[in-house]
Length: 126
Figure 1 (cartoon, rainbow, N blue to C red):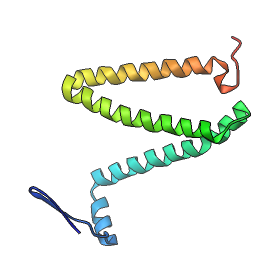
Figure 2 (spheres, one colour; figure 1 turned 30 degrees about the vertical axis):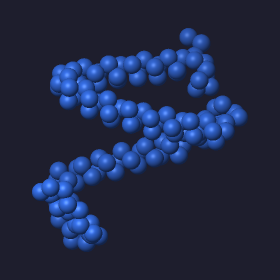
Figure 3 (cartoon, helix red, strand yellow; figure 1 turned 180 degrees about the vertical axis):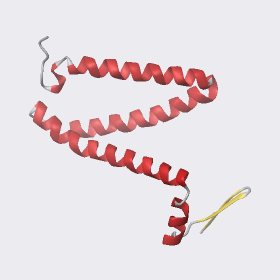
Figure 4 (spheres, rainbow, N blue to C red; figure 1 turned 30 degrees about the horizontal axis):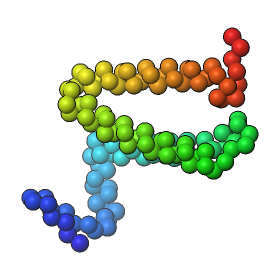
């Protein structure tokens, strides 16, 4: 199968081991693929662990709650990717960095707020 898009042409074939080795010999490619592997591996491990932890903390936990949790992850990822692209393309590099700083600060404040409530099952009495 051949795909054509104006001046770009690509062929969808199964890569040979030699091709994979040649691609990974470039350190930039090896670093990029390694980061992507670690990111997906960690994210998948978290998604597999969270339902069991929620069942232990909250007691009666249903599959619908787990599904809502996964839908929240997917929605956050989709909105985040579109929103970050918009901020970077239309507002510039400095605004992009400021926006990331605000998002990180808000996320940290929200996590601290949740840690001080009964959401995680342990109430901090201090």
